[in-house]
Length: 573
Image 1 (tube, rainbow, N blue to C red):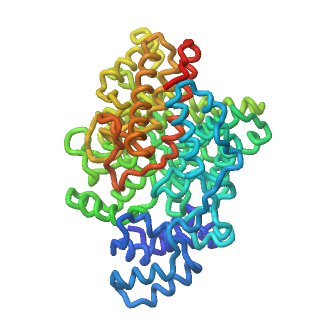
Image 2: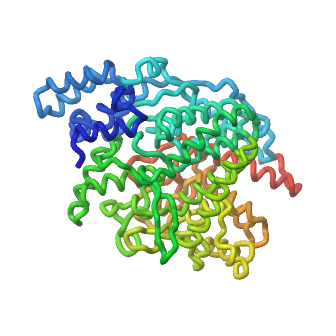
């Protein structure tokens, strides 16, 4: 494992250019919140049921002073001593945040207030109220003394997912932005996006979440799609010109071979260049420290090194699917257990579909600004990526793209919604020569309907029941919307519209029934038992919930538009 000296230098270099040399505030904070003896002692002592609690508590003095005080304790410190130490030197988790009412929030946005169905109109307006409960701004001291906080500075107000997730999360934000736009909150949406652009300016990429302990990894790159969404409803060419260089900077981060996100796959004389999730740090995640140590200990029994397990856990967290049988080496032919995690060895179909969409959108945005040479560069990159995906990932048996597993040199056998929803959302339907056998993507739609994924309460994430939250029986809102919008892009030549409508109705009904039963919007839902939130994973199910609210609002407006076009809108429950 990395020595402390090398680790400090490595993390400092990851955090920001020159951070290790100039002792940037995030590098200073990281000595408490990312690694080191204090973090290890507190997390291994099990002071909190949730490891995230400790690393979310702000320091009451500078990190150097707190670490010096810790060194003066008699070591090893017992649990009581550690608890007293933390309570003396740290504030309460979340105390650096303030409730915030976005200035452009209104009681009854026109788009939602005009929904034809009374029950769903009432529900939509209640979801609009939830933006106020999830909106936050930071205490000004976070900007004055950033070294005392794990929270990354934010100059604009923002919307959090809810529950234990007290900070912004990268890919969650795309569906939150969609919901804000549907609620008429264009200025808030732009400010939320600008916060993430500031991350790219500061770090060269967008961290997994808005905490220093997430600075070793990102999440699915949705920033360009957020900019496209805001620009569509609130055009501002000056803003677009200002943010475009930072969208390109983020793309460069994902295409930087030294970061480990780029992989080369050879088939004979041909080579495919594709992306994967990765972290360069081989340590337990600060926010899940004791859980990771336990997983590494179990993996040792099967000969896996702790370093590889920790990298796999971090790569899996970067995927946003933390965790799924997709990342487990055993999933294709045995029990899917966390001790076999190898997320960094998987070349994901959904990540590469998102990267394809980024390339297409960067070409579009550059054309709008008359940057034709740059537009051509990204168009060429998108074509090359599709060719690589067709060569490596396409499975004619399901009419879908499958993950590729490096150690075996084979496509994954896991039946995953990521193989359908995200490629279709990005406009990827397979090789051009398959059209003669599968007109209008009929094989893909048939593959989805016979996959076992489509259920009474929405579409499963995978068909494997592993106990992980990104597996059966859970249905996650973002993937439902990506799938529905991907089907909508196909038109109705292969039953795509009816399939999309059926999935939208099933998922909305599940969410509404759960709302009526519990009074909450859930992070995830049980697709087999409508009316109940989902489960599984390494933390208790959360409610709130930012991206679910955004997706549901988008689906309600979609449903209302279709009823209007068909002349079937009703104005009673």
